[in-house]
Length: 109
Image (cartoon, rainbow, N blue to C red; front, side, top):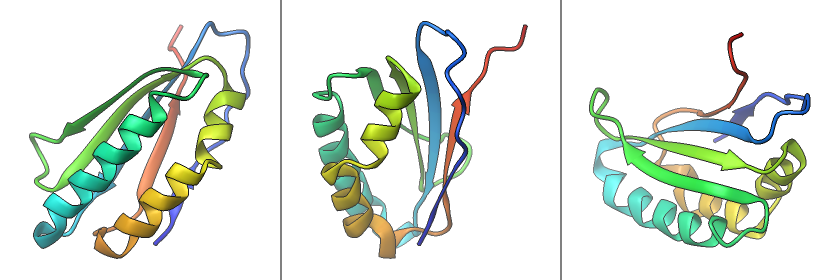
């Protein structure tokens, strides 16, 4: 179980938006949903978290998607190192159907 993420340098943006996709084994959707709901509750309490929303894909069954806004890249980095992220990966890791992909977004100008 791994996590792919790409570092993006904060270039003066007012906030950092991030999308993460979490593919889940079909028999484990309920357990992963519960772990992600716990993660969402802890994450929204983080000082640098502007918003953190959890969705399920309507196109790919068993794939969860987070839509996140962070005050800065440093706040997102701190989130990735937090105990609640480690706990979520410990709980959900064996139940995933592939890599978690984390995508910090850059506006197209």
